[in-house]
Image (cartoon, rainbow, N blue to C red; front, side, top):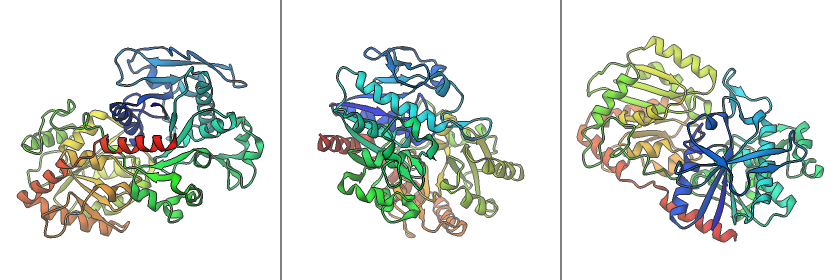
Length: 481
């Protein structure tokens, strides 16, 4: 089965968040089941400067797109053995030869020409499909950046099936209606009540939901939550309900080869569920990397690798911060996002230099080090379609503390007060009080080393590899055909 996977991100070539990890890992698992998978991405500046080698695409070295600027755009293929599956890139000097995938680094805000960038990419994907000698059986599209592709497939009558995979309904590609003429789709489709129109604007996510043959999201619980109302459905619950059985949730997996504490090349020391002695040495390395002093075994090291946004519960952490600093804990935080949180947590770091360290930006080595060296991993998300870090944490014996929502509810089993089972700590209400209460409960177990080691081992033995989920995607592809 030939699958074309289209995305704005794919690890390790272009990454902002978990979308890149999914698109980097799922094709490998599908290939293991006999599928022939190619990934198609924009040719970002960071990709061009990443040290990889490229050749003109063997089938489609150029695509033609009229009218759109120069009309002709290059397509490149990753050369040699740099990828375990074919990865191709669509070039556009004006739209992709810049720093930052979604946001202008100078402002922290989205690029002003964002809708034109994704309109071009979707139109280019359509042109690419038409230029291929043998089109794929299924085009697997990720998030709103690709949401217009099913509309072009329908409008052109292309002989492919489309799966639209939603990783987060909060990001919809919702733009002013003045951009509608640039779509080069039937103008009537953007009229009120029609597939492209959403509350007087145009919406790429709505287009993907409407025109795709199937729609999937990233966990069973999130698939149920988004149908219940606007809190999780983001005003798309009606559209998703209209898909009926053509909408489903399949839990994301993790790349068990990359995320393995017994072999991880980004960890200074290795350990396993059977012998976790070296985890303490990784913790010391993590403290040194963030410039924090060692406070002994009685102090729990909390870790966060996250976008600094409201969705991720940074407001909950901020409200609880001073109370948290009175507990026997230290906290390391890696990520970037809303500038209000950059400033707020930088202030906390100045107030508590021995207990809290913030590192703005993304560093893959540090991300692995946080997963390996922390005792507890915090994910107090307002909503979390799936989440990957809690699964990485479980595999690394770093016990997750999460809010019960979306994929966090599907993957973390709450440890009861008497212990004996469970893999992590879970709270319900979106409040600092609920978060602190569960943190204090977790610290009670942390002070009991045998009980804590048992929690760690249960999590490390859980299987969240892509194998099971890839089989479900193969079943979904077959049902579409």
